[in-house]
Length: 70
Image 1: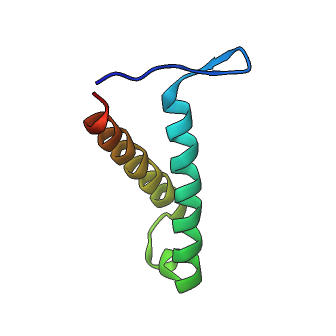
Image 2: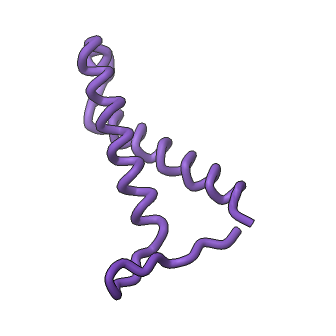
């Protein structure tokens, strides 16, 4: 597994920060879908549930990317 820092106008950005941003956008989309269908009303603590979903999306994306990076 090898991740390389990304140079953005002279500022080095860690690859995990880009993965965190992507996971955040995907979690927002999933939250809107669950909000539209009213599924968050069945959860004991909605904020904790959304945070857990964010961690699941982030860890899955890191593991999938680590598998495909030589």
